[in-house]
Amino acid sequence: MYFVRTASERDVEALQALLVETWHATYDALHGAEKITELVQHLHRPEAIRANINKKDGEFLVADNGKQLGGMGFAAMSPTMTKTAVLYQLYVRPGCQGEGIGRDIFAELETCFPDAEILRLEVDTVNLRAISFYSRLGFIEVDRTKNCGGTDSGIEAVIMEKPLAQ
Image (cartoon, rainbow, N blue to C red; front, side, top):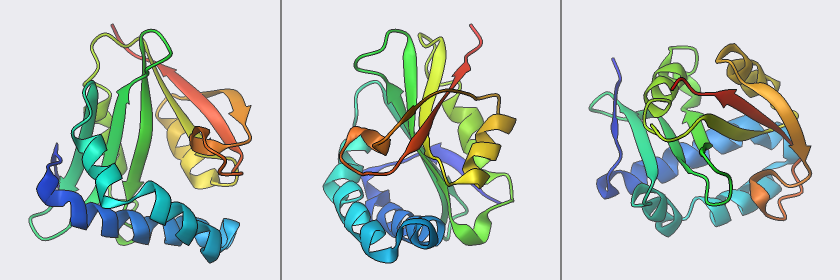
């Protein structure tokens, strides 16, 4: 059984391992292992994970069973969009997918931003499983971008939003 809790700096190494495993399992077949290795090395450095854990106006959660992390989620208030929280990361270890971990992490994140009216995210256009997951959670497509994550990733993404209960 996994329990959702706030991440701490003690989790950085386990989070990095979870992100590397999850990204390669999800994206290698879609974009090639070399490109994913390059993105993982840039996006999931220990200092980047630490910065997100300590981000003001952010919430970084993990699903922990006492032996391993089964998933993680990170969201924060948008620095540019009023009353909007952004879900930057929600990943579940491949061997734990389908057990409700992503849903549980999301349910907790959804309650962490009382001033937000909208929750926004970007998801790779070819990651149909994730698009379906977010649609089931109430997200709808509102736009698209050529660079998921706002960098020069070259990965096209669907931008989805969900209104939050007030």
